[in-house]
Amino acid sequence: MKDEYDMSQAKRGPIVPPAPKKNRITIRIDTELLDWFREQVDRVGGGNYQTMINDALRDYIQHHKEPLENTLYMETTLRRVIREELQVVGL
Image 1 (tube, rainbow, N blue to C red):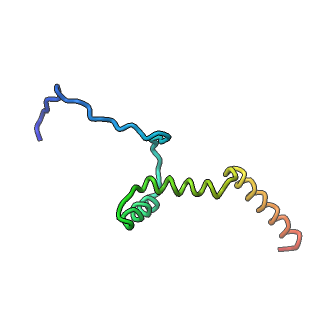
Image 2: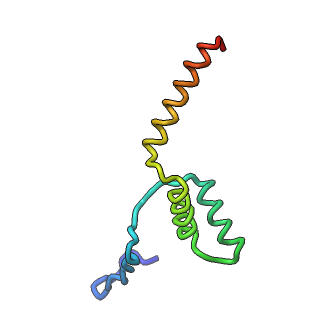
Image 3: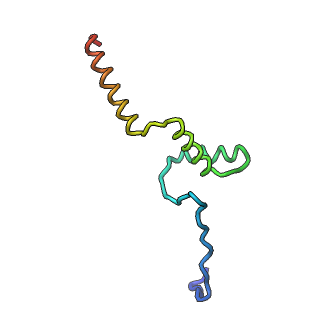
C-alpha cells in the first residue's frame, strides 16, 4: 500500500437509487433469522433474501389484519378475564 494516493482526478462512483416504492433503512435483525433467509436463497439456487423478508412481512400483515396494539390489548384483557374466572372457581 502506498503512503499517499493522488485523488485529484477521482470521481465518485454511481449511487444506485432505490427502486420505486422502496426505502433504504437500517434495522437490526437476529443473526439466526438472517442466516435462515440466506440459506433459503442458497437452497433454491439464488435469489434475493431481502425480497424473501419483504414477502414474509407482507404475508404476516395480510393474515393479521388487526393492528398489533389491538391484538396486545385483547390478549391482555383475555388473560385478565381468565385469571379472574380461575379465581372464582378456586384454581
